[in-house]
Image (cartoon, rainbow, N blue to C red; front, side, top):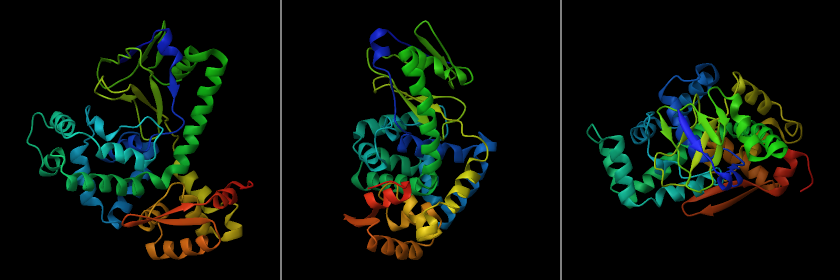
Length: 331
């Protein structure tokens, strides 16, 4: 059970993140690949992602990520630095800026009672090459396991935020916290929030604002950072219903804009919700990189896509005109 006590000032500073956090989703989805929790809702996703990991040659990479972040009661805090406000690239920048001492301490806690795998010892050393590998591995995994499902993640996050906003407008922070009572095991009474948790714990606020972050790949219980000195954050389950992936694929197959520019190009355009490489876009859409490259070129000529070089990579993104075309609004 998790206990969070509030005083008046802490209640007034309570906030709900606008969206799911990309690195929390990355880490929690990695956990879901390691177990069979929420099997009804996520079994189709597991099958799809495992197939995509094989196609993109990421099985060995993910195996090493699992060693860094096992599905256990404790996993390293430095892998989830966000509170719903950062993009995947901003989040990765924060991960790679983790001090060497903290890397070693948190990974050492994971392997306190067993030998360290070589890859874990490598990352814990904080060398530039090791951190570069870690950032690239997380980015490539995110492109396959999280990015293709952003439409569903955003839809569930937006619906949940609307419910929280309605409660907050009706009764302030106390009504907002009470609105979580619909989750099994949650209770708010007398300025105390109690929620199910893998172990018995209190989250001290010490006057700091608590950020509530919706988690699409968070299942069963909410999660928080292990280190109480870090800014307090509580990731809570969105609990998507069974069949969410089927509905997502159906919606992607017949978007209205597809009648204008074609189904495949509309899929490519919709998948450009954040800057991404050709390889990453291929992972999001399930298309071959050569096919993606062709359609991106056509969309770029039409002013719907922009491509910019970022170091050794070329990142593609939707233009305002591309977004307006998808949304059916004026740019």
